Length: 532
DNA sequence: CTAGGGTTAG
Image (tube, rainbow, N blue to C red):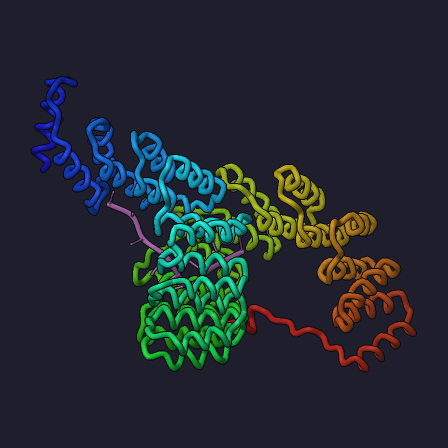
């Protein structure tokens, strides 16, 4: 084949755009062989493709689009698509399915309308691309319109199109729609059933999910995972565990789902125990490790964290961005900022989340200057900071007492078009109040576009305790008690403030109240305790 | 020549 290609190119050079052309069949074979190659034959395929554009048939054009779509290169895919002399149904389907991944409902809808205008009718592959893009976006209402179209074209009978309609009605939380679409499918396959169960579970109808599970004529392991995830999402951890224990077949995925369920339910010890049980007979995936590292980070279990890290290293597991970021975060949250920084610096690919973990790590270690410095590097490297970046940055400033820098970053956030959320205000209140700028903090709270929450009042209250400011402290404490009746920290700080002022009568009254309402201080946790 | 369902980080 290579020989043929070489001589063809040679000949084409000599007979420059004269009568001699390579037969279309040969070119198609040549291009598809390149695209099938394990190593990247794409560049070579594109070269041959470009030289022979005028004599290629549609399947070859479509294969070229597919090649780019599979690699996620949508700009290139679009380029080829736009150059096509005649776009057929496969071309449209391929480009629409590719665009699904970009989560750009406007473009997808525009293209879909353009396709209809060109006189082509969608088939059972076209609609899922459109439906899946609009569901879960602000354009979900289109699901109903597309369903109507599907019915008119007889496509709602298809299991393939039907499953995307099921997802569409799930995103609308429309139980009746979900069931009606399911009934419309003429030949229900295992996917139809699985997606139906997923729909029931997502909308919160666990019982209906269980009923469908009992009724279905065929099952596979994905059915079981759908049930498992359904239970976990509905916080039915006991049912999930029972189901998991009874599963006839399990794989790495099953274990990961179960472990992740416990992590999300904040049952970190159970999660780590299950992980230990798992490694006896399974090789965890990078999904497993990420979720386990999250558990380690949240419970400051450095020991298990380090074990996980060495397992990853020892078996030469590909450490992707997500996994590396989990490592950085685990070390940062369990107190080893040096290790965190080391892993972070060695990361070949970073993303905003990675930077956030690093900056957040510096913040929690009180290293304000380092956090600010890392933020500058992040900007220099061209990464876009987001809300999380600024929460970390502002809390770094708050912990390090960098008032001016904090105010500066707060304004920068506005200039970058990132809306300040409650958490940002909480950091700013903390920052200002701690620095003794209590009036400024109070004004900030009054100017907020939402009601202050416990965290914000708490930050103010804490600082009032620090600066022995009784009047404002009481405003804050009242704010808290309006939101939550018994809040131990509020009583605690108020006692201190009153005590410092020598207002012992108030202190006694508070202590009495605490006894009556059985208020207890919240449990503290430390890195030392969690080391085991 | 296009093909649907299940998991990860800040």
